Image (cartoon, rainbow, N blue to C red; front, side, top):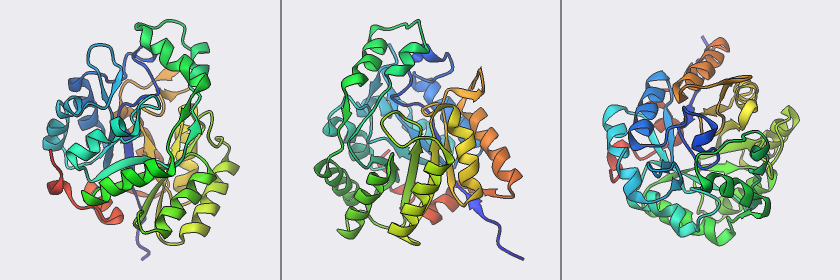
Length: 310
Protein backbone atom coordinates (compact mmCIF):
# COMPACT_ATOMS: atom_id res chain seq x y z
CA UNK A 1 0.00 0.00 0.00
CA UNK A 2 1.47 3.42 -0.91
CA UNK A 3 2.48 5.66 1.95
CA UNK A 4 -0.05 8.42 2.61
CA UNK A 5 1.32 11.89 1.97
CA UNK A 6 1.37 14.39 4.82
CA UNK A 7 1.17 18.18 4.56
CA UNK A 8 2.16 20.81 7.09
CA UNK A 9 -0.38 23.53 7.86
CA UNK A 10 1.24 26.80 8.92
CA UNK A 11 -1.04 29.40 10.49
CA UNK A 12 0.06 33.05 10.41
CA UNK A 13 -1.90 34.38 13.36
CA UNK A 14 -1.42 38.14 13.03
CA UNK A 15 0.99 40.28 11.03
CA UNK A 16 1.93 43.73 9.79
CA UNK A 17 -0.22 43.88 6.65
CA UNK A 18 -3.73 44.20 8.05
CA UNK A 19 -4.77 46.76 10.65
CA UNK A 20 -7.26 46.41 13.53
CA UNK A 21 -9.88 48.52 11.73
CA UNK A 22 -10.09 46.02 8.87
CA UNK A 23 -11.54 43.19 10.97
CA UNK A 24 -12.81 42.96 14.55
CA UNK A 25 -11.45 39.41 14.59
CA UNK A 26 -7.78 40.27 13.99
CA UNK A 27 -5.93 39.46 17.23
CA UNK A 28 -3.95 42.36 18.67
CA UNK A 29 -3.62 41.96 22.44
CA UNK A 30 -1.40 39.25 23.96
CA UNK A 31 -4.48 37.41 25.24
CA UNK A 32 -6.09 37.45 21.79
CA UNK A 33 -2.91 36.32 20.03
CA UNK A 34 -2.36 33.49 22.51
CA UNK A 35 -5.97 32.32 22.39
CA UNK A 36 -6.16 32.34 18.58
CA UNK A 37 -2.77 30.64 18.23
CA UNK A 38 -3.76 27.85 20.60
CA UNK A 39 -7.11 27.38 18.88
CA UNK A 40 -5.39 27.22 15.46
CA UNK A 41 -3.03 24.53 16.74
CA UNK A 42 -5.94 22.54 18.11
CA UNK A 43 -7.58 22.81 14.67
CA UNK A 44 -4.53 21.25 13.00
CA UNK A 45 -1.83 23.86 12.45
CA UNK A 46 1.56 22.25 13.07
CA UNK A 47 3.40 25.58 12.78
CA UNK A 48 2.28 28.92 14.23
CA UNK A 49 3.85 31.96 12.57
CA UNK A 50 3.76 34.77 15.11
CA UNK A 51 4.02 38.56 15.08
CA UNK A 52 3.32 40.88 18.01
CA UNK A 53 1.14 43.98 18.30
CA UNK A 54 1.09 46.95 20.61
CA UNK A 55 -1.92 46.08 22.81
CA UNK A 56 -2.95 49.75 22.99
CA UNK A 57 -3.45 50.49 19.29
CA UNK A 58 -2.60 47.28 17.41
CA UNK A 59 0.53 48.71 15.82
CA UNK A 60 3.07 46.03 14.74
CA UNK A 61 6.01 45.79 17.15
CA UNK A 62 9.21 43.76 17.30
CA UNK A 63 9.84 44.53 20.98
CA UNK A 64 10.80 41.15 22.50
CA UNK A 65 8.83 42.06 25.62
CA UNK A 66 5.66 42.14 23.54
CA UNK A 67 6.37 38.57 22.38
CA UNK A 68 7.16 37.50 25.93
CA UNK A 69 3.57 38.26 26.90
CA UNK A 70 2.21 35.38 24.81
CA UNK A 71 5.03 33.01 23.77
CA UNK A 72 5.25 31.02 27.04
CA UNK A 73 1.48 30.59 27.14
CA UNK A 74 1.35 29.26 23.59
CA UNK A 75 4.28 26.94 24.21
CA UNK A 76 2.75 25.56 27.40
CA UNK A 77 -0.65 24.98 25.79
CA UNK A 78 0.38 23.34 22.51
CA UNK A 79 3.16 21.29 20.95
CA UNK A 80 3.08 23.37 17.75
CA UNK A 81 6.30 24.69 16.22
CA UNK A 82 6.53 28.41 16.98
CA UNK A 83 7.88 30.44 14.07
CA UNK A 84 8.83 34.06 14.86
CA UNK A 85 8.88 36.77 12.24
CA UNK A 86 12.08 38.47 11.15
CA UNK A 87 10.01 40.43 8.63
CA UNK A 88 8.23 42.51 11.25
CA UNK A 89 7.09 45.47 9.21
CA UNK A 90 8.59 46.93 6.01
CA UNK A 91 9.00 50.19 7.94
CA UNK A 92 11.48 48.64 10.45
CA UNK A 93 15.25 48.23 10.28
CA UNK A 94 16.69 44.73 9.99
CA UNK A 95 18.11 45.09 13.50
CA UNK A 96 14.60 45.75 14.88
CA UNK A 97 13.11 42.93 12.84
CA UNK A 98 15.56 40.30 14.10
CA UNK A 99 15.27 41.09 17.83
CA UNK A 100 12.58 38.50 18.73
CA UNK A 101 14.30 35.62 16.91
CA UNK A 102 17.71 36.60 18.32
CA UNK A 103 16.27 36.80 21.84
CA UNK A 104 14.10 33.69 21.90
CA UNK A 105 16.04 31.36 19.55
CA UNK A 106 12.93 29.71 18.05
CA UNK A 107 12.84 26.52 16.04
CA UNK A 108 11.86 28.54 12.95
CA UNK A 109 11.97 32.20 11.91
CA UNK A 110 10.71 33.76 8.71
CA UNK A 111 13.18 35.30 6.27
CA UNK A 112 12.23 37.51 3.31
CA UNK A 113 14.51 36.67 0.40
CA UNK A 114 14.78 39.99 -1.42
CA UNK A 115 14.08 43.70 -1.49
CA UNK A 116 10.82 44.61 -3.19
CA UNK A 117 8.10 47.18 -3.64
CA UNK A 118 5.44 46.27 -1.08
CA UNK A 119 2.18 47.94 -2.02
CA UNK A 120 -0.48 47.97 0.69
CA UNK A 121 -2.04 51.29 -0.31
CA UNK A 122 -4.86 49.78 -2.46
CA UNK A 123 -6.47 48.75 0.85
CA UNK A 124 -7.26 52.43 1.38
CA UNK A 125 -9.89 52.05 -1.36
CA UNK A 126 -11.45 49.03 0.34
CA UNK A 127 -11.55 50.20 3.94
CA UNK A 128 -12.94 53.66 4.62
CA UNK A 129 -12.94 54.04 8.40
CA UNK A 130 -9.88 53.62 10.61
CA UNK A 131 -9.62 53.75 14.40
CA UNK A 132 -6.01 54.94 14.59
CA UNK A 133 -4.07 57.54 12.61
CA UNK A 134 -1.10 55.20 12.19
CA UNK A 135 -3.19 52.80 10.11
CA UNK A 136 -3.77 55.26 7.27
CA UNK A 137 -0.15 56.42 7.40
CA UNK A 138 1.04 52.78 7.38
CA UNK A 139 -0.88 52.04 4.19
CA UNK A 140 -0.26 55.37 2.46
CA UNK A 141 3.53 55.15 2.96
CA UNK A 142 3.64 51.93 0.95
CA UNK A 143 3.22 53.97 -2.27
CA UNK A 144 6.87 54.97 -1.89
CA UNK A 145 8.27 52.00 0.03
CA UNK A 146 10.97 49.46 -0.74
CA UNK A 147 10.92 46.56 1.70
CA UNK A 148 14.66 46.33 2.22
CA UNK A 149 16.18 42.84 2.31
CA UNK A 150 19.69 43.20 0.92
CA UNK A 151 22.25 40.42 0.58
CA UNK A 152 23.90 41.78 3.74
CA UNK A 153 20.57 41.81 5.61
CA UNK A 154 19.87 38.21 4.62
CA UNK A 155 23.40 37.13 5.55
CA UNK A 156 23.08 38.81 8.95
CA UNK A 157 19.79 37.08 9.71
CA UNK A 158 21.08 33.69 8.51
CA UNK A 159 24.23 34.01 10.60
CA UNK A 160 22.30 34.84 13.77
CA UNK A 161 19.77 32.08 13.16
CA UNK A 162 22.40 29.46 12.33
CA UNK A 163 24.28 30.24 15.54
CA UNK A 164 21.06 29.61 17.52
CA UNK A 165 20.02 26.45 15.68
CA UNK A 166 17.05 28.31 14.21
CA UNK A 167 15.92 27.22 10.75
CA UNK A 168 13.99 29.43 8.35
CA UNK A 169 10.74 29.77 6.49
CA UNK A 170 12.18 31.34 3.32
CA UNK A 171 9.52 33.74 2.04
CA UNK A 172 9.92 34.05 -1.73
CA UNK A 173 7.70 36.64 -3.43
CA UNK A 174 9.18 36.23 -6.91
CA UNK A 175 11.52 34.01 -8.93
CA UNK A 176 14.48 36.30 -8.19
CA UNK A 177 14.08 35.41 -4.52
CA UNK A 178 14.50 31.74 -5.38
CA UNK A 179 17.77 32.54 -7.12
CA UNK A 180 18.91 34.55 -4.09
CA UNK A 181 18.13 31.56 -1.89
CA UNK A 182 20.13 29.33 -4.26
CA UNK A 183 23.06 31.74 -3.83
CA UNK A 184 22.99 31.36 -0.05
CA UNK A 185 22.53 27.60 -0.35
CA UNK A 186 25.66 27.43 -2.51
CA UNK A 187 27.56 29.48 0.09
CA UNK A 188 26.47 27.10 2.86
CA UNK A 189 24.59 29.75 4.84
CA UNK A 190 21.15 28.39 3.91
CA UNK A 191 20.98 24.76 4.93
CA UNK A 192 18.75 22.05 3.47
CA UNK A 193 16.05 20.99 3.71
CA UNK A 194 14.88 24.47 2.66
CA UNK A 195 11.36 25.36 3.83
CA UNK A 196 10.32 27.58 0.90
CA UNK A 197 7.17 29.64 1.32
CA UNK A 198 6.18 30.80 -2.18
CA UNK A 199 4.06 33.95 -1.79
CA UNK A 200 1.48 35.01 -4.37
CA UNK A 201 -0.78 38.02 -4.84
CA UNK A 202 0.93 40.83 -2.94
CA UNK A 203 1.37 44.01 -4.99
CA UNK A 204 5.08 44.17 -5.85
CA UNK A 205 5.58 40.40 -5.96
CA UNK A 206 4.56 37.67 -8.36
CA UNK A 207 0.85 37.47 -9.21
CA UNK A 208 -1.78 34.96 -8.07
CA UNK A 209 -2.41 33.16 -11.36
CA UNK A 210 -2.01 29.36 -11.32
CA UNK A 211 0.63 29.77 -14.05
CA UNK A 212 2.63 31.92 -11.62
CA UNK A 213 2.46 29.11 -9.09
CA UNK A 214 3.59 26.57 -11.69
CA UNK A 215 6.50 28.80 -12.73
CA UNK A 216 7.71 29.18 -9.14
CA UNK A 217 7.53 25.41 -8.61
CA UNK A 218 9.40 24.63 -11.82
CA UNK A 219 12.12 27.13 -10.92
CA UNK A 220 12.52 25.84 -7.37
CA UNK A 221 12.59 22.22 -8.54
CA UNK A 222 15.37 23.08 -10.97
CA UNK A 223 17.38 25.07 -8.42
CA UNK A 224 16.93 22.87 -5.34
CA UNK A 225 16.11 19.35 -6.52
CA UNK A 226 15.21 17.28 -3.47
CA UNK A 227 16.66 19.83 -1.02
CA UNK A 228 13.47 21.83 -0.51
CA UNK A 229 10.05 21.54 1.13
CA UNK A 230 7.39 23.57 -0.66
CA UNK A 231 4.64 25.66 0.94
CA UNK A 232 2.01 27.97 -0.56
CA UNK A 233 0.88 31.38 0.70
CA UNK A 234 -1.90 33.02 -1.30
CA UNK A 235 -2.78 36.57 -0.21
CA UNK A 236 -6.35 37.69 0.34
CA UNK A 237 -9.03 35.89 -1.65
CA UNK A 238 -6.36 33.71 -3.27
CA UNK A 239 -5.52 31.96 0.01
CA UNK A 240 -7.62 28.80 -0.25
CA UNK A 241 -7.66 28.40 -4.07
CA UNK A 242 -3.87 28.60 -4.45
CA UNK A 243 -3.22 26.47 -1.37
CA UNK A 244 -5.57 23.86 -2.83
CA UNK A 245 -3.82 23.86 -6.22
CA UNK A 246 -0.43 23.62 -4.53
CA UNK A 247 -1.52 20.88 -2.15
CA UNK A 248 -2.66 18.76 -5.09
CA UNK A 249 0.87 19.12 -6.52
CA UNK A 250 2.71 18.25 -3.30
CA UNK A 251 2.88 21.51 -1.36
CA UNK A 252 2.44 22.28 2.29
CA UNK A 253 0.06 25.16 2.99
CA UNK A 254 -0.15 28.41 4.94
CA UNK A 255 -3.31 30.19 6.05
CA UNK A 256 -4.08 32.76 8.75
CA UNK A 257 -5.35 36.28 9.34
CA UNK A 258 -1.94 37.75 8.56
CA UNK A 259 -2.44 36.74 4.93
CA UNK A 260 -6.22 36.98 4.49
CA UNK A 261 -9.09 38.28 6.60
CA UNK A 262 -11.65 36.23 4.71
CA UNK A 263 -13.25 32.82 5.07
CA UNK A 264 -15.23 33.05 1.82
CA UNK A 265 -16.31 35.90 -0.50
CA UNK A 266 -17.73 38.69 1.63
CA UNK A 267 -17.47 36.72 4.87
CA UNK A 268 -14.80 37.65 7.39
CA UNK A 269 -13.08 34.79 9.18
CA UNK A 270 -13.94 34.98 12.87
CA UNK A 271 -10.70 33.26 13.85
CA UNK A 272 -7.52 31.77 12.49
CA UNK A 273 -8.85 28.35 13.42
CA UNK A 274 -11.71 28.74 10.93
CA UNK A 275 -9.20 29.07 8.10
CA UNK A 276 -7.17 26.12 9.41
CA UNK A 277 -10.27 23.95 9.51
CA UNK A 278 -11.21 25.02 5.98
CA UNK A 279 -7.84 24.13 4.44
CA UNK A 280 -7.75 20.94 6.50
CA UNK A 281 -11.03 19.95 4.87
CA UNK A 282 -9.42 20.54 1.45
CA UNK A 283 -6.36 18.44 2.34
CA UNK A 284 -8.39 15.56 3.70
CA UNK A 285 -10.63 15.72 0.63
CA UNK A 286 -7.47 15.17 -1.43
CA UNK A 287 -6.54 12.19 0.79
CA UNK A 288 -3.63 14.17 2.26
CA UNK A 289 -3.01 13.65 5.95
CA UNK A 290 -2.38 16.72 8.13
CA UNK A 291 1.09 16.58 9.67
CA UNK A 292 1.43 16.75 13.44
CA UNK A 293 3.95 19.14 15.01
CA UNK A 294 6.43 16.32 15.57
CA UNK A 295 6.02 15.15 11.98
CA UNK A 296 6.66 18.73 10.82
CA UNK A 297 9.81 18.82 12.96
CA UNK A 298 11.04 15.63 11.29
CA UNK A 299 10.18 16.85 7.79
CA UNK A 300 12.04 20.16 8.32
CA UNK A 301 14.81 18.75 10.58
CA UNK A 302 14.11 21.20 13.40
CA UNK A 303 15.99 21.30 16.70
CA UNK A 304 12.95 20.70 18.92
CA UNK A 305 10.75 22.76 21.19
CA UNK A 306 12.97 22.08 24.19
CA UNK A 307 15.86 23.98 22.58
CA UNK A 308 14.26 27.44 22.47
CA UNK A 309 14.82 30.34 24.89
CA UNK A 310 11.26 30.87 26.11
